[in-house]
Length: 310
Image (tube, rainbow, N blue to C red):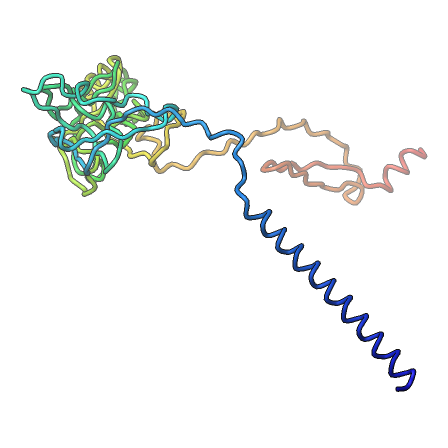
């Protein structure tokens, strides 16, 4: 056998042995790595359980005037820091007298927490008195299809009240000419009811004869006086608009009149009499100041030079 053949075979055998050793080492490393990743991680500490609090919720949709029963309610555990203010935690807090009915005053949806301001007390009914805010009064206003915004006002909307009456200044004049004036009497007033409808979920237009509003005592007095001395109309506000804006008194005599622009006239300066020597030495100059036109006589330039040279 030749020497070259022997060397080639020896080299091949050596490389084969090295390949086997390297492959075996790689396989062992992969197995150990997979074993380490599959071992469970020891938890240092378990998460702390959050405290909960019972809250009464409704089990179905409820509308104004519905009778509240225990079958329409259930208890749900809320996180203690998420409990709504004014909610109930037990049935006993709601049904203190089982012989009397409890009425729903505001619409509620499925799984909504039951709030104390959305129901009446035992023996209560879906009346207007249960819906008036503390410190306010309910007052009625006579309206028609025009003053009531064509019936598009529904309970829960907010309006401004316009007061129209005779101009008191004209009654003191001898001619006593009729001149109506209009003022914004109240702004951002809540509508409690339309005729006998107290449902805030009403959406259909309903032309009413009476609108009940929620106002302070002093504002109720103003409304009563305004009804006796003039007429009231309502302006429907955009949803969510609460700003109270300054208003002006509008007179009927001002309607259709364009504002008059005052022109300040400058006092006319006295004319300077210049003796006329010859017709060719005097020139007439027109001066225009706004709407004022003045004509003055002045000497020509060549005449002034002759007089200066004397």
